[in-house]
Amino acid sequence: MTRQQKILTLNLFLLTFVLGTSEFVMVGLLSEVAMDMKIAISVAGSLVTAFALTFAIGTPIFTALFSRFSKYPLMLTLIGIFIAGNIITALSGSYGLLLVSRVITAVVTGVLIALAMSVASETMPMDKRGPVISIIFTGFTVASVLGVPIGTSIGQWGGWSMTYWFTTLLGIISLLTSIVTIPRGLKGTRSSLKKQLQLFVYPRIVLAFFIPAFSIAATYSVFTYLAPLLQDVLLVPARYISLVFLLYGVVSIFSTLIGGKLAVRNGMGKIRYMLLAQAIILSSLYFTSGSLVGGLISISLMALVVYLMNSTMQLYFIDWADQRVPEAKDLAASLTSVSVNVGIAIGSAVGGFVTMNMKIIDLSWVGGLVAVLAAVLALINYRLGRKARSSASIDEIGQHSQLKGSL
Image (cartoon, rainbow, N blue to C red):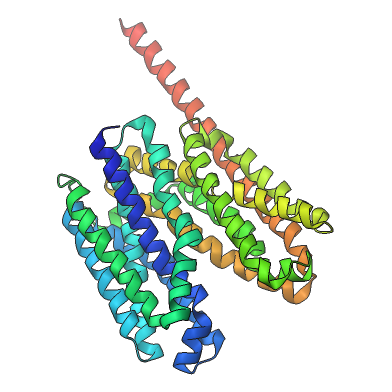
């Protein structure tokens, strides 16, 4: 990689860190927001749900609509809107305005992530795309490990609005670095929304979309309720729970980086085995929960496998679009992050159902079953791909034979 490519990678990492901090920090500020706005905690929680839903629904639509524009001015404009959204959030004096600002921020966050992945795919050497994309994804993990605790501490010290002045500052820094580092020659693709949505006529794309969705759902069915599980089952004192979350976050960084290396080594051929390993690890918590050390080992391994498939799936979507629907490459670049947000919503819902109707430790084997479902989808996708390659080889041999016969 050239020096310019390394600097660009660092900037795209910074961008996802900023976007992730702005998105995730609201979870740590719900109590402060509810108290300040004089609303129920469940109403404040709807801000998180609204962000995720807007992200999942708006990202593919707006990414497709904006794909006709050159990436340099488009990304700078969207970062500017992101900054404005965070300013409105910081100034919000009512729940309604706060909700609107989060919806606006969610839309531009999703599109910026897709564009960051697309820029990386177009500017990096073929053998470096997987590792670079994993580094960009790592920005979100680092946001969870560092950005959210810092933002939460700022909110507890100076009020939740101060946190969003902090994310506004981060956005301005990201804008300035993007002005310098993002290549100016990356043109858009003029195409209608209808033509780009043809990407979804391929069953394997639809099938592949639900692989990361169910994988993340498997983990989040446990992770969403990890705090009460730690307290009530592993008997971890409340003052140490934040340390367990820190441990989880640090280990998950390695998950993203390892996933980047797997992506350049036939990741799609291995992904079903990764998902089966995830199922075993999640289910193991049911048996190790009687021991604090054993339970923490299971949770650490859960963090280690959570993002292994991200880079592989990202390259799969981009390469598929590049070969079959080139005008939908930016849309394809958004699918992994959209799928992850869908998975978070599914996992949270599954976890909520289990905690209301079963024992909380049952989250472990239920999460394992969801991971098995993801592995089954990956196996079906892999076999369909192998069948398609075999058919293509047979057709090629037939054409070669006909050409030889005519000669």
